[in-house]
Length: 476
Image (cartoon, rainbow, N blue to C red):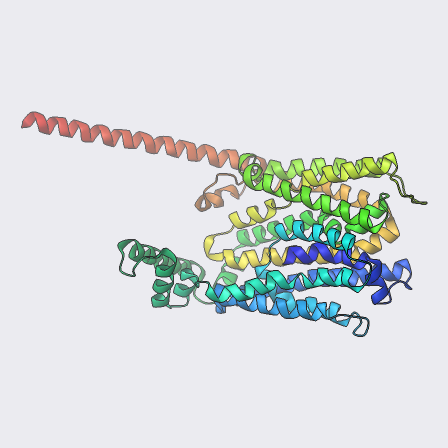
């Protein structure tokens, strides 16, 4: 749901029918960019607060009712926005993002972007210009939100959460339903015991209660440093320009010579497809084969080169025509190539890294902080991108390209590799005095030595057993 509105809102605002409905055609370019920035950035602002509230909602209400509440609130907000018209003005469009902030915890970001980009194109192509053009895109939000609201009451509550709330009998019933086993089955009894032991261990480390993980993180300087490191990664992720592209793609494609609503939306749709396949490639192969550290560096290097090329080749279209210049076509090609570098690197790697570097008993709280950081930086980018294009023109590409170059230095100096490092050994990656670029190889070498020593001990034990057995047989 989050991914869907991030894809359709920019294109919907750019439609002539939307501008006519809400009286935006009479505004100057600067005034329209300000309204557009306010509408788009409100989506990011609500996500920031939604991420913060996601922690207490998940803690007190649980997963099942938290999902249900989020879905219901989302549907209400989407219905309000669908009811927007010239008579209501932009009030409902501005207000809806605030209302649906709680729905962030149930949003997904990949498939909805892919679907929404093409829905906007198909709707614009086959629906005559008018209110339905943009209204259909707004109304489509009701489908995923409604399905989640209808389905979430049938979900089983998390056994781990039930145990954490001292509802052990309910946890047994829930797990029995999930596993399709009777409550007295040995496997189920063993699993429940393991969950109870794990929860008790986490409470002993973090302290019981809602603020236990909070106190644990902020009382440990090492965890505070990791919290700042993780938050910084999301700042650099947004510094690639990705959310500026997600929310203002029509403006960006127009700046390199793409004219006409249909052409702009089609180009945006192709961008969405490339982003989808890049993300799948990252998920299935890149992140675990190449690792986190080199993936981020390669993504920044390739992305910066593509951005600089766009600046050097594409020329401003002072008198746009129905056809693209060779420079414009080349710029679009390198823009797509930028997407190829971004999607398998910065798109998902910060989320993986931040999920790995924190202890298990603090992860719910720290991931809420990471999500809030992501949406805060996204809000800043979305809020000021239209004004940046008005004031800087092609300087926007130079701005993001230069930030990507700086991100290479940041990753090299501060972001260690975590591939194949067991979670219980993650502390060693951040050991004082250990350079970031040597941390992974040092820890992995120690793990290999331990494995070799352990294997040697097993062989010795096995040899001792065999000798004892032979001696026993001889004595008989």
